[in-house]
Image 1 (cartoon, rainbow, N blue to C red):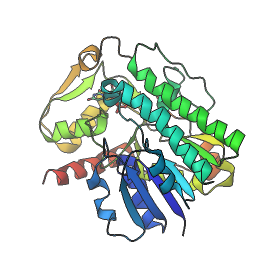
Image 2: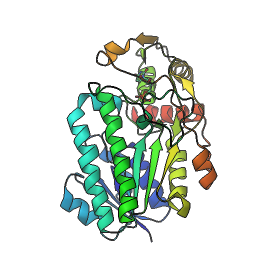
Image 3: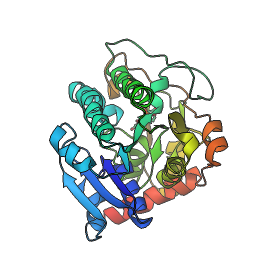
Length: 323
Ligand code: UDP
């Protein structure tokens, strides 16, 4: 039986990953400080013999070391998440993403486990290419804009992971997630799909920032985990970086209209200037689309879930939550 440690295991992606691992016969230890994760996300796994939840912080070196003993793969997902959260907690976000990752990767190296880093499409920054491929340049804005500190810390995590691979021969894989969505994702930290769905279900205005013509590719978390697990099982993936997501894109205004139609909501769609939603000088990306050539050629990964199917899953989740 293979053993996994999942940091951030009670978070949105973390809890889906734990569920998948348990279902596939892995023994799983999930560690989470429940700052943005929720115990409810993994509560249903607690009755399974192969699953253990540890409420704790990745900044606790001794705890992380203990949890990493005898593990085959460390999935490092614990991080500050969400544009809103990062802007509201810039210092904590930086410390967690840099020092926290340092602690987890050191424990992985000491225990000779594989180390999987959850990174983000934010590292591409303001690059205006149509499709981002893994070796593209990063273009980041001024240090006075908090959003870029997040991109910068995740890039540093990637550098650290690559250095551990080169210098310490640690087996590593880096994933850059592009707008991953699905049930259990909360809108509290800014993510657009859960925000639009809850606004529509509550009959409140659907808040579109800027002109709504910015475009994103929304991937279903189940597809993303399928791709991750294929790569973890693939020798050729070691030491590399992979974009993971979908190439189907939508503008944010179209997204608002689709959510409104699928929920049959009477909500209005309201355009809100960025400076009212965030600080003055906030920078947003117009386009952000992954080039999936590398993951496709390495493991044949192709996302299966369309945006409408994804939205229906999220809508069902929030309808059941409110019962
Ligand atoms: N957005 C929006 N209304 C909201 C939340 C987000 O219009 O209530 C926009 C946001 O400005 C961005 C897009 O939706 O252009 C995706 O936002 P999210 O925070 O989900 O992901 P990002 O791509 O910014 O990391």
